[in-house]
Image (cartoon, rainbow, N blue to C red; front, side, top):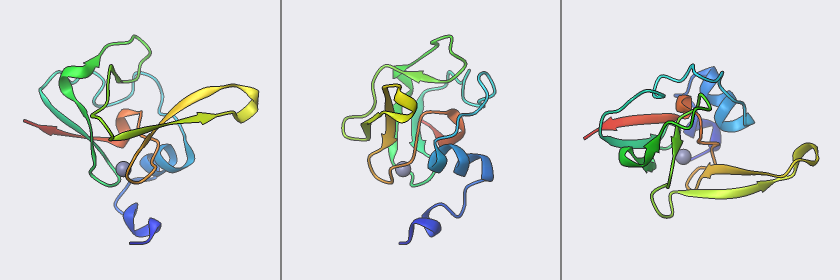
Length: 108
Ligand SMILES: [Zn+2]
């Protein structure tokens, strides 16, 4: 499958965050205050990334997780603009999966 096809069903905002490493406005995420139990999946490819039990309120305005499902995400070192950051990407499609706009919640 071509990359464009894989991302075809996504909204412009999702594509911006997943592919261009954009960031949604803090506090705007639909899943930020979600407390139901289930699984968070990559919005692009459906790869399960996090379990709801690992979610915590970091106070940053973005959903935060203690731990991803083993092997589901990759950490990428990013040296853009001389700042060292560690970026979390989906191990399957490489999407930048950290904002709630990029996650699909599946209730248990
Ligand atoms: Zn993915």
